[in-house]
Length: 421
Image 1 (tube, rainbow, N blue to C red):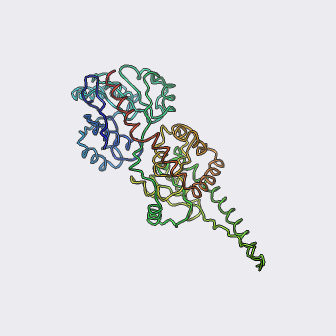
Image 2 (cartoon, rainbow, N blue to C red):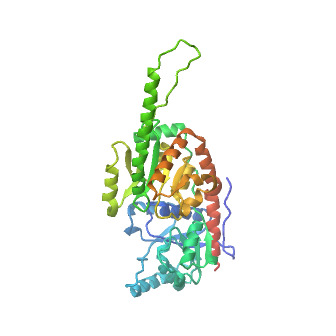
Image 3 (cartoon, rainbow, N blue to C red):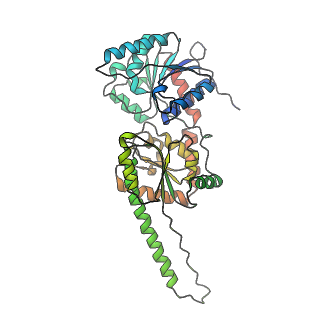
């Protein structure tokens, strides 16, 4: 086993990192990144404490356990939100936390919620600790230059996010690209046995062409666009089934011949595709999403609750779709699915478009174009079913470009550089 080298500050000591976040339970890619990266920091010999708002986040009871197992100190933080109408009270609250942070003698504050940049800047200024802001998503503010100075460094998960924050006022020389990485051991490649087990557990008939979406059931994530396109996918499947039936009927009406050179034609059976949706409904959009699901034919959609262990879902499917309307900062779903040996159709914008570059560019689409999305789903689902080598190619792509090792090296290097600012 190769020991990972430790990244240290200029004086040779390990870093003391203060992680600033909100919820601790894994309810999305950001929370998973925080936990995985904290684990890597601890393994590399750095001291970590996590300042959080877990009590106010979903599934609060699940959050602390993994961090306790790492021996990480957890500290309740005050509300990190900032509003113009409450600016004075907010600033006072941030100053108080900055004084608390000063007593922790940290080398760097690592803010994983860029929407809390005003809080981070005040806390950094008061505590005297350099600030590293992880840019997981697009800017929440039109202009951030007044908040982007001092000892602040930005860690962008993609070039798209770097450009978006630079346009909002982040100095380009203060932005470092730190792409997310996936633990490919945690998302192993599917095998024939794992596929059979997963499908049997989910009640999916063997041989059913299956598409998976997992994540939040919101319009911004493209769920409604996907459900609209699925009507066209089903219509295409019905048309092909009718064509197969016509060919079969014509074959059956052809008189048998004694000519031994004649061969009977075999016609493949066309199965109806299945869309699997796994995730959480949000109250504000629950009615419209549920109505869109109900409008589809019975048996064409399988809806599953949100879950942390998505590997069985990935192994049960042929193609994963990530049709986010709002550009993704990175696209964790894409690298997780490809690590599991599943090709992905994703939005051509944002971080997903960067991951699916070069030979994978044909796996991107504008999800707002319903017909284009449906055509891509039909074509790529066929290809995924007929060409098992796509899975191996997908996993190789992720292992070499988006594995944990390059991500951790980039992250620790950026945090060390931030500590020296």
